Image 1 (tube, rainbow, N blue to C red):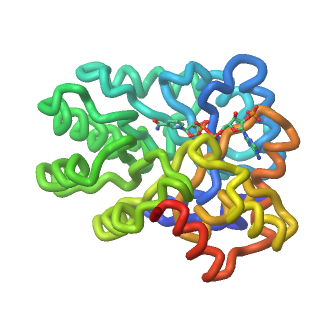
Image 2 (cartoon, rainbow, N blue to C red):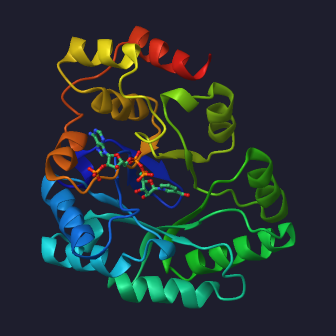
Length: 262
Ligand SMILES: NC(=O)c1ccc[n+]([C@@H]2O[C@H](COP(=O)([O-])OP(=O)(O)OC[C@H]3O[C@@H](n4cnc5c(N)ncnc54)[C@H](OP(=O)(O)O)[C@@H]3O)[C@@H](O)[C@H]2O)c1
């Protein structure tokens, strides 16, 4: 399966981002390498890492061992917000560890603790994109107000905001605020932020002969929200990718949305 066979969302600059990616937080060392290689063998074409995950080297090694072409795998890494003044050297270290010339998406991992750092930090991301060290840039854990501050100061919107998201956290208005600004919503911790024994999820899962975890992932994809489940367990790595054989009805989508609206 190559990138064009999977549902994707288009970022500025004609960058195609697969809606389903593979999370790698806490997947380190040999287990991290094995998990990423298994994910690529399974068909994932989108990997999510970060400077602070301490696994960029394993992610890069798995990518190389997979035999896939660099352009067929979408790679995100993230800049710790406390690296103000050291942004470019941090990105260079990420590129070197990953063994690539360019990442597909570089995110500010969390808003800087000093609000005055926000715009200078964002300008460093713009510069890295303009130097082709990353194809797209974005943020993580930003509020809508923090995104608006970047847009107002630079007239450049983040392509993506990666935030904690799940059916239980569903917030229609926040989703719309992202859409209105041309910012793709990317959800993290889809399972940790879910009750996989919730009766709504188990009912819909049995109707489709799938697991509640697969329903959670499919719900993101049907909302065009990027989702990046993590697993180091081979059966889960493949089950979490096996979500393209079914889709949810409009009524099921509404029932799942309602889990976050109570
Ligand atoms: N930007 C940020 O601040 C931020 C914060 C958190 C996460 N993230 C990113 O988002 C990714 C996903 O979030 P996450 O790792 O926090 O949590 P997650 O993907 O919601 O959950 C991972 C946990 O769920 C288990 N799991 C995996 N598949 C499962 C399944 N089918 N059924 C039941 N349990 C399953 C995993 O166990 P095993 O591994 O043992 O199989 C692991 O314990 C991260 O890896 C990271 O890339 C970003």
